[in-house]
Image (cartoon, rainbow, N blue to C red):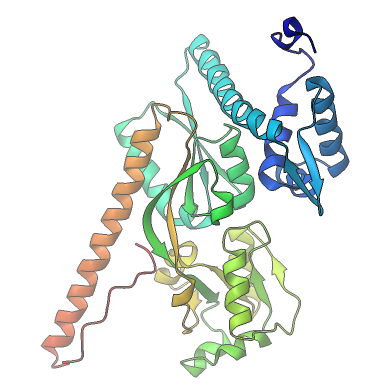
Length: 343
């Protein structure tokens, strides 16, 4: 390739080539990348081959069913990621300014945040910044992080992803939350008090699908306790479906505690009295490290922090009040530790 040609941008390279390349590099697999970006595996492979032809170089080296970046691929990835994100942000900003619109800030919400933290935070934010344009996107963890990397989402609120999925991302810890086993209020297992965890396997389970952030946590929890479901499981990320299904069956919904906290408080659902403390995981804010946050990011993040702090104070006050009530009744048992299952 001549120097003059190497200094020119090849017009055949499209955004789809860069998006596909970035996702394959992250997933180290054309199959997994195809699932994350909604394409077929042959379409992903074809796009990568086209990009390599246009660049006149090899970007990936297949190794044992995985796609490993070559040294040139590693170098190209750094520029492709930052360029794609910056370009998308620029296009959105120019389009909004030209139309006299305010910038739109897109938040990716995992279930635990979309059910409890984010509604209160965005309601608070809207009162102080009524003209801010917000978009909330829900989905599985791998899809939201893929969109975050590509600049289609500005911030993700929810559980922290696995360490290998956090490359190029930053996480701000807010609180910890455990997994819960939710059921309808009249579920047979609730009549027996403290449960033998093996009893859970006798009922149908609603579980998070592969790609969700709590899927491996749930798998480890069941394996460690030798729980083998006797009925077919239902994989779902739909809170509406799960809530309605529980009310019609004796199924058990395995989900982050924050997702069902308000249902439990209202009496619409109940939690099985089983120990899940070893499923605690960090919940917080995930952002990219390669670009600066746009203007709405700071007030959005501040609103989320405020709601978390308010819930923590309320939980602490409730714990103190309950302790004082017990003391007034002559109960000298030790004060229980504050529930670390989230605000």
